[in-house]
Image (cartoon, rainbow, N blue to C red):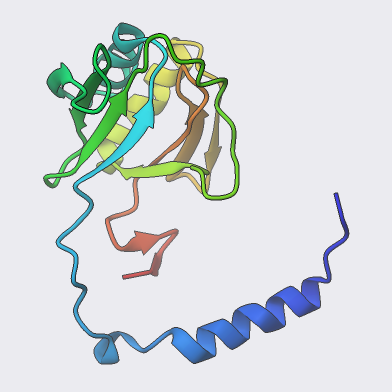
Length: 165
């Protein structure tokens, strides 16, 4: 690991913020309607379904063949507000283990109702899923293939009590 000049990093972050971040009332509307789906890779379809549907309570909404790779499955979970979490499996391909790489996934943060958040944390504990709770509203853990997931009880557009949208 190389050493990082934290003061230079902070100055650069401030420069970028000053150049590009407009106050809420001055921002143009987004051209996007929302996140249609995020697609991850699964090494075992049924294990992934059991984890996301049975443990995390995200209903499976569809399971079809991947149009781009014969024999591969493409399946979807409802994560609320018309948004989906999708997966592919790629039988016969050596996709290797999960890795956090430049341009790759660091984590996916999914907002859940505060009453459900505590129940889901308890379910993670009961299932023996290693996890870490932060700020009493956020829990981080890894799915069966190693992807990092966060369940956050803050409302959409808010993070740890601060408006980000």
